[in-house]
Amino acid sequence: MALNNNRYSCPYICPSTHMQGEETKQQETAKIAVKPENILSAPYVPGNVRPRSPKVYPPGAPPKYLPQPTESTSGDILWMSPVGPWAAGHIDWSPQAGITGVRPVVDKYSITRYSTGEWRKNNQFTLTPRATDKAKALEAETQKDVANTFSNLDKKLNHSNEMLNDRIKELSYWKKQVQSTLNGITEELAAIEADRQRLKGACKILMLPEAISRECLELRTGRYEPDLVRDDAEQELIKEVAIVGEIRKIFNDTLIKAELQIEMIKSTKAAIERDWSDKEISLKIDNLNYTLTPDSNLILAHPGVTRWPENATTLEYWKHYCAESIRNCEDVRKMSAKLRADLMTSITKGGEDMKNQANRTNSALAETIDATEQMCEKLEDNLKDNLQKIADIENLIDYLKESLRNVQERNKCVMTRLHNRNYERPSVENCRDEAQYALMAEAKFIKESSESLQSKLREAESVRSELMKYRGELEKDIACKRKSLNIDKDRCARVRAHMPTPEEFAAG
Image 1 (cartoon, helix red, strand yellow):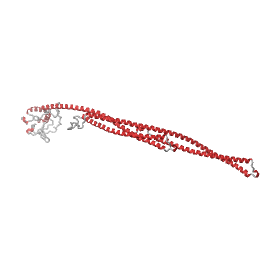
Image 2 (cartoon, rainbow, N blue to C red):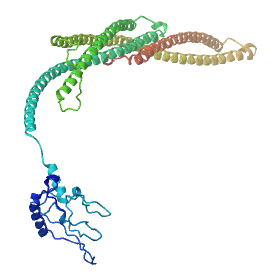
Image 3 (cartoon, rainbow, N blue to C red):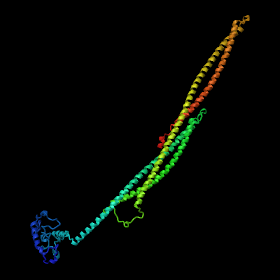
Image 4 (tube, helix red, strand yellow):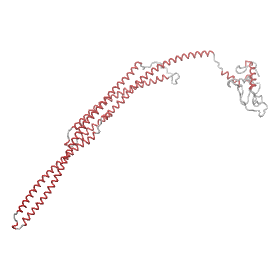
């Protein structure tokens, strides 16, 4: 059923009457181009359903969602029979069916209202732009104003970036200067701390030579009385103890100065570190600001920040403060370097003085030891001679005793002869003959010889007694000298072998 009144038709969806001729032509073209497939007509004939052939679009056809040259928006080309399982209802169904009240194609699955051509026609209408000239003019003007605004904003941003870049360079320069000064004061602090530890070690080491000197003095008090003298070695040991006391006083005074200097360096280092930290924070902030752009994801709105801070300083004062902090730090560092030189001088000179005094003491001890050794050797030689004399005297005594025994034997012989002649000869035969006189003379000589030998024996025993006494004196003196040598050469030398060197003093 067709309507001839155009006021009930939609120019975009429902075709008008003047378009019926064109639609008729399109339907004829569609009938020629598209052949119906699987047309179900009554009655149903088995075996008439065949597979669907794919649609073939001509070359250069528009997209599938836009109207095609081979289709129509009329419902007469649905190729559905009026009767059957998919009955199309009235065969005169048209897109105007919704307006005229004619029922659309209805089955138990769906309600068909529009054709595929109408859907594509509506897609084309939806995709067609509908901008006005006013919108175009407003858009062009707005784009021009926005372009000028953003051009000026970019210039301001570039100028701010240049100023920030200059500030970053200046901050980097001063930060490098402060960093160099900080490294210098840090190295100076480490150096003076090492020297202070070295000086404390030297003070500890100084206890060793003092203990050695006092130990040597105490050991030398154990000498026996003949050698208990105040010799050169004793004098040098006393000087050594005095020098140790003087060096300790100098070391303690220098150590107090070093500790005060370290406190000053630490306070100066803390100030320069605070300055470096402030510059590091400022440099990070300016670097961050230099990298920020309107496209950054870290930017936020901060109302009320376009003002001068209350604690802001002038650029001139900032430069003066940077130069003054570096100058103060350098002055403290130079003072510390001078003190370190004095400290090392005191350590070096003190060690050298201790070494020289130790050499003097060792030399005096060596002279004393040499003289004592020579005396000991001489005493030992005398002792050897004395022992040899004692042995000779003892041999002499034995010889005299043997001689006295022989004399006694001879005396017994004479006495026996006289006894026999005096008491055995009878009467007149007992006369004073020459033999009697000879025997009497022999007896007298034997008696005199015996007395002479006994006198020699007593003299030899007296000499032996004197030699024995001298031997005791020699042995006692030798023991005294050996005791002194043991103290000076062995015990004192063993103790003084641990005397520290100037290098040990310098190393701490």
